[in-house]
Image 1 (cartoon, rainbow, N blue to C red):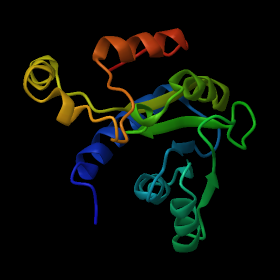
Image 2 (cartoon, helix red, strand yellow):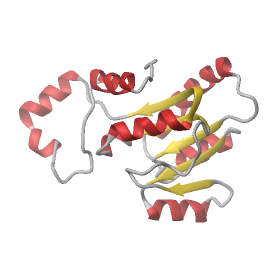
Image 3 (cartoon, rainbow, N blue to C red):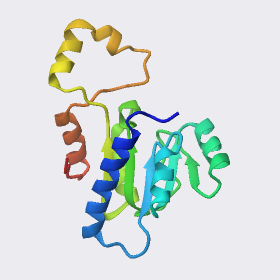
Image 4 (cartoon, rainbow, N blue to C red):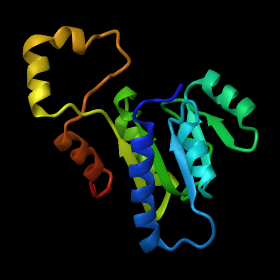
Length: 175
């Protein structure tokens, strides 16, 4: 099973990464961390394209399965409120897709991104966004069923709120 959005996400990700890499000019292989790697689809994607890729996740089941299925790749189990087991400035790129909406402490994660990224590094971040009209329709007609208290999404971002968080942590949104 593969997420239906994965091919488009991979296309946009590699396009952004390659555009950035032309100006960054790292010495050696580009190191990529998938923060919230889940089933390792993107870790494998980066690895297959020649990047040095690793993944972290809070799911022990996912990390153990990834280690078993992909012994040539590196994975680490983390908790939502403790630092990852990497030194400062360890990565050129952090990929974090469909993760921040699940976090209680978004600022902690962004502090980690800052700590882990080398100067000039790239944060590739995605989170669900419905758009203004759909958000209004949901708010008017199905608020309780969409924003369920027992669902795994803790928060929802608008373009403005995501930009605010990025800027608060010295990230300059590009797109």
